[in-house]
Amino acid sequence: MTIRPGHVRGEFIELARKEGRSAEEETRLAALKREMRDRLVPLAPEDVYDAKVSRA
Image (cartoon, rainbow, N blue to C red; front, side, top):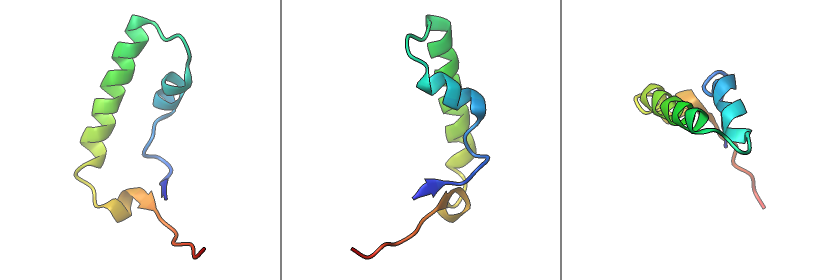
């Protein structure tokens, strides 16, 4: 399962991957998480994710 392009903003990815974030950066990352939650939760899962079923 993968999230479709455009749902995760570049700033979020950069801050989430950054090691040694400052207190200000942690606050910004938390705000970005809330913003993303508020955008994605109302959407249907099929509008957010691409899923493939694999057979093992």
